[in-house]
Amino acid sequence: MDPDPVYYVDLTLNGLIFGAMYALMAIGLTLVYGLLRILHIAHAAVYAFGAFITVIVANATGSIALGIVVAIVASALLGPAIYRLLYEPLLKHPPYVAMIASMGLLIFMEDGFRILFGEQGLTFTRNPYPTEIHQLFGVTINTVQIAMIVLSVVCLTALALFTTRTRVGVAWRATVSNPTIATSFGVDAIKVRYLNFMIGSALAALAGALIALLNNFVEPSMGFVVSYKALAIIVLGGLGSMRGTLIASLALGLVESFGTILVGSYLDRDALAFLFLIIVLMVRPQGLTGARA
Amino acid sequence: MLRLENMSCGYGPVRAVTDVSFELPDKSALALLGPNGAGKTSTIMAIMGHTAVQGGRILFNGEDITHVPPVRRVDLGIALVPEGRRLFTDLTVEENLTVGGYHLSTRNDAANRARVYDLFPRLSDRRKQISGSLSGGEQQMLAMGRALMAEPKLLLIDELSLGLMPKMVDQCFAALATLRAQGVTILLVEQNTTRALDFAEHVCVMTSGSLAFSGTSQQAKQDENLFDVFVSAGHE
Ligand SMILES: Nc1ncnc2c1ncn2[C@@H]1O[C@H](COP(=O)(O)OP(=O)(O)OP(=O)(O)O)[C@@H](O)[C@H]1O
Ligand SMILES: [Mg+2]
Image (cartoon, rainbow over all chains, first blue to last red; front, side, top):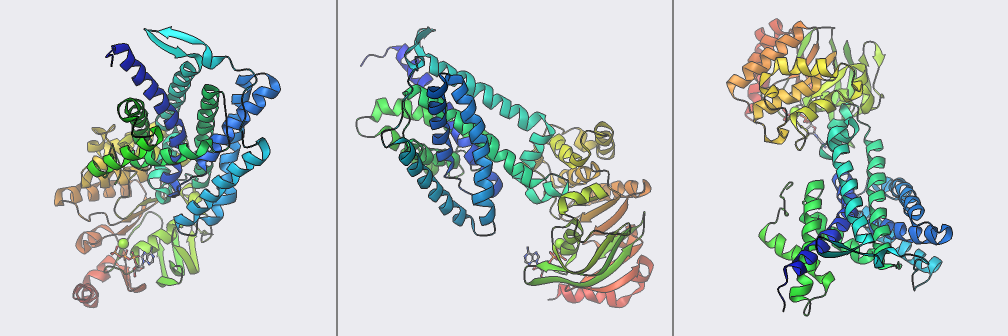
C-alpha cells in the first residue's frame, strides 16, 4: 500500500461529491417527512425520472444543458402532482398508508421506465464530459465532477438563503415546525406543501441528471439503491432537519469512499450505508446532529 | 367585537363544548376560567378555526365567521397566544416574529418589531437565538410578541402564567395591561383566578364543556358557588 497523500485527498473529494449528490436527493425526502410525516419513497423515482428526461431530451436536441433544464422543470411539476394525486387523498389515514402507496408508485414508475425505454437503459449519444480530465491542485477530476461540486454548492446555498432570508422561506420552516400555528398567522399550509414538493423534486432531478452524465448511463432501477440510502441519510440526519441531512449525506459519501478501500473486499459499497446507519444509531440514537427527538 | 351564539364544538364524534354563548365588547377583557378539561382551549381554538364547530355561530364584528378558513382569520384581526406557547422552536426569535406578521407582508414590519422589543426588552437581546432555547418566561413573551406582530384587534391568550416564575407572571400581565390601554380586546384563559379577575372586567366560567357562570368580575368575586366549582374540580 502506498500512503500517497494525494490519494487520500482524492478519496475525500470523491466522497464529498457523492455526498453532495445524496444531499440533493435526500433533502426533498426529509422536507416531505418534516411536513407530512410521510416517507416519500417515490422520491427516488423522481430522481430516475429526472435522469431519463435528461438523456432523452439531450439526445433529441443535442443539448445536454437543455436536457437538464427540461428534466428539472418536468420534475418540479411531477413532485406536486404526486402530492396532489397520491398523498393528499391519503392524508386522513395513518402515515404508513401513504408510505405503502409511495412504494407502489416507485415500483410502478420503475416498471414504466422499463416498458417505455427498455430493460437495458439508455446512454447519451454524445457526452464528452466524464472523460474530460482536469488537474486541480494535483487531483484528477472530470468536468461532470466539477459541475457536481459547483451546482450542489449553488443550489444548497440558494436553498439556505431562501429558507432563512425570505419571508416565504421562513414561513415554510415555520410550517414544518408547527403547521397549525403557522396557519393561524396566515401561512397557507397547502401552498407550502406544493412548494416543498416542487423544490425537493427539482433538486432530486438535478442529482439524477448529474449521475446520469457521470455514468453516461441511465437504467430503470437506478432509483432503487439511492432510495434506501436516502432513507438511511434522513434517519441519520434526524428526520426533518435540512442541516442534519446535509451533514449525514456528506458523512455517508465519505464513509463509502474510504470504506470501499478499507473493507471493500468484504462489503459491497452499497451495504456500507446500512452498516454506517446501524453503527451511528447504536451510538447516537438521536441521529448525527440530534436536532430532533 | 366577538360573540359566541350557542356554540358547540369538538373532535370528530367527541363533543368538547356545548352551547356556549358570551359576548366580548370592543376594547374589553374577558377571563375564561374553569377546571382542567372544561373546554377552554377547545373554545379558543374554535374561534381560531382549529376546533370543528358542531353547532351555533361565532360572530366577529357582526360578521359570521363560523366557516371562515383558519388561514384567513388573522386577516380579520384575530391573533393567538396558544396553550404551551407552541413557538416555532427551531426558528430564531426574529424569525418567529416574521411569521407573526406574515399576513401583513412587510407592511409596518419594522414598527411592529420595535413595538414588541419595546414591550419585551429581554427579547430584544436575544433576536438571533433559537426560540426553543429560551427560558419559559421568554418563550411566553415571544408567543405574545409573535401574536402582536399580526396587529390584532382581538388577542386570544391561552394560559398566560402557566409554569412561569412569579416575576415573569408580573411582567406578562404588565405587558397585557399596556396592550389593553392601546385598545386591544383580550380573551384570557388563566389558571391564576385572582390575577385573572383583577385583570378582566368580564368573566365566564366553564365546567365540563358548558358555561357555569357569566358576568362581571365584581359579581364573580362575590359568588361563593363559583369557588366551589374550582374546589370540587380540584378534588376529583
Ligand atoms: N384533540 C382532541 N381530541 C379529542 N378530544 C380532545 C382533544 N383536545 C381536547 N379534547 C377533549 O376536550 C375536552 C376539553 O378539553 P380542553 O383542552 O378544551 O380543556 P381546557 O379547559 O383547555 O383544559 P386545561 O385547563 O387542562 O387546558 C376534554 O375532555 C379533552 O379531553
Ligand atoms: Mg387548555
